[in-house]
Length: 291
Length: 336
Image 1 (tube, rainbow over the protein chains, first blue to last red):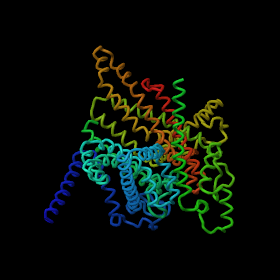
Image 2: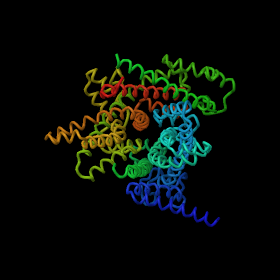
Image 3: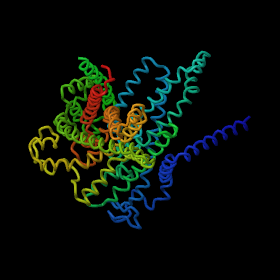
Image 4: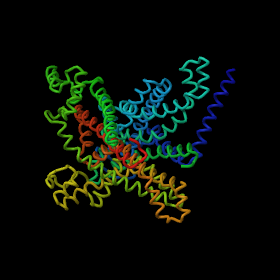
């Protein structure tokens, strides 16, 4: 029995892996985006091995241009820009990942409840969500992070709140369209409890939608995170952080110390482009390759 | 008559949305734990007496529900309270000073984004090669995820530092050049018949408006391209072609169909535009409410932050109203 269960799980896992790799390899946008994101993820994980210097210690003279010793030069305090850029990927990726997980979980839960129960509760939820959705997400995220205080985890919460409506709307719509299918009615007629119907019979159908929202959402979330750190609402100095390093580099443009700003700025954009390519690929796959 | 009623109903519909956002902002900034005064001062070493005095002065000692309604009442009257940092400074006055700069930047950015977006989208739709089509479509997705400060700072580096062609930031080379009438400097310069100042204002506007415009042009590219292509496949166009109507004229016809989705989208775009404006203004030291917000964030000036955020909510509400009206005017199918 246990053997069967094991092989079943292994089978499922390997099939899922196979499916995932087929999707990734089957579409060149997804593949390109995946490679970009993967490079950054590896960079974050292996930062200790890749970075030649400590990101927060002064390792040389200030404002040195890129050279063999300092690949991306040194900043105004004499820290190695290359090492800071490598370590900076950690904050962005971690904050965004937490934010997406939170907003996905809460948005999905609220969407399921609201869509399945319906009635007044649904109307109230939808109205609040629509109001948040209509509001400039960055500005709301700024207000939230200010209130919560500057830190990566608070920034993640702020970003999560802003994106909950996106998940909520998609999931709710999906639930509404499934809710009246005959098989759900049968389940209800059989007296299966609502929670079981929702988790076992509705939730699995929402997965596909979630993937689409997730792929569209992540590039945006990266940019929001970068924007929050640009105005100093995530990690505090001297911790390395692309957005805030970019902000500091701003002051050194007229004096021509371009390397302080170009590298972190490029990384933010490239990472967002990676996610955008995945999203592009996913929507191509979903629409059957038409658009 | 019908239209007036439609506008009135749509206008009333904004109120609950703004109220919800006000409530949300209020909860976030006032109800959440943490004393805003302490955060603003940045130290906890302040005598109890003095703290109480400060709280009283700012009206923070009253019960929350009273603060909630008082603030709302004052806000409607145009009183947004005083800055927590610069004592006695009226926030409404500050915002009135900064708002025109943001409006001017936004309007020019929209113009840029429409030019770039519709232009590229049109080219993409007309192109015969698949490679060009794909390239245009991909450009649309990628432009949209460019990090505004990264693009802005790179443009500053190229055009201001190395080529020396354009100013690095601000709205005018010297503040004394204009006596603001509307606060929109390009228009003020024209009213005051100062062509050189007009050019100066344009030079300052060019990079920020292009930066923001380029980033938000992405969706327009796809929208234009998809809609033109869709119309070109329709039966009407087939009928035109069958009658031997010139290809130029057919395109002009197809193009008209793009206007409705573009108008709708511009309304939706506005909330993105506002978020983008905050970053663009900060990047270029553009003295609008975006820069104001970021300044206040850095000083933890809660009352000012609250006011700016609610102002943004009102702006978004108003633009969605304007778009709805435009929509009703352009599209005869809209019933009111």
